[in-house]
Image (cartoon, rainbow, N blue to C red; front, side, top):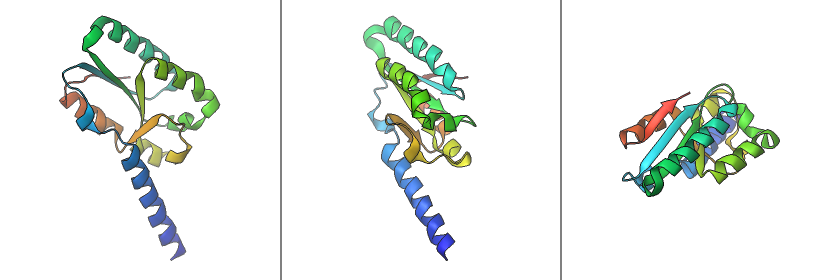
Length: 142
């Protein structure tokens, strides 16, 4: 009985945290040029941020949002605040939104509360990417 209560409590908490921080797709300006990148490696965040800066310069006033969804087995690296600090600062400076895949968090045993501030969570990173592409986002997977 104790295990069932613990499992239900964790499931509720995980669902609540995801719902609380998940990006609201209704607030995206689809008249702008928006971008989505799906990645599995933290080290790719630097070239992704450089690409975002280049797109912002090229698009000018037509530039909208740049989202990066992180999925896969390396997702526990996102909880290492010291390791992530320079990447998060770079992303913030470039106005790039970092989003963690909730499915990957769950699969690889990462507690969403352990993620640094500023990282959003979506239920399924791949589905989120596809939804944004349906809204007109330019996208790619690395």
